[in-house]
Image 1 (spheres, rainbow, N blue to C red):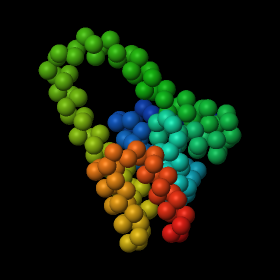
Image 2 (image 1 turned 135 degrees about the horizontal axis):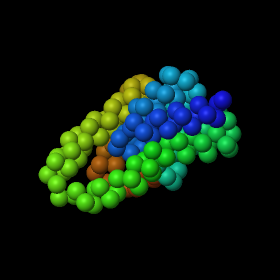
Image 3 (image 1 turned 180 degrees about the vertical axis):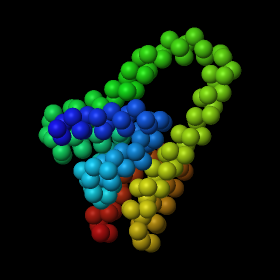
Length: 172
């Protein structure tokens, strides 16, 4: 039963999320933390940090972790398959339509309309995670410094994550 629930939940997430892994985060949080209560908000925030540091898309890494936590290796495989299956089917099916209609003004207009929504989903994910993570002046300062480093330096995000992980160990 848990295996089926993991597969269906992550297939739902994969089917109704746009904008890649970051666009999926609000729905993943809603389903995993609030609807099914498979993770606490703290566990969810922690896995996002790990998912960022490991290779692969954040949504796939999160699905893999949740599936493993709930039902072992098979749960991990089913949750991961569920989250990628809708995109795989959709992209495979629509590839020829996109190629045939790439110059169609209505088609281009649809994509123009989707772009701001994707940005809103990413900002929404940042707000959802941030409100439970940035809880004191120290965390605000750390977040702003990390944002500044990502925006204004050529440092790779992995190095910033590792450095702030070490800093977090020292501070907290």
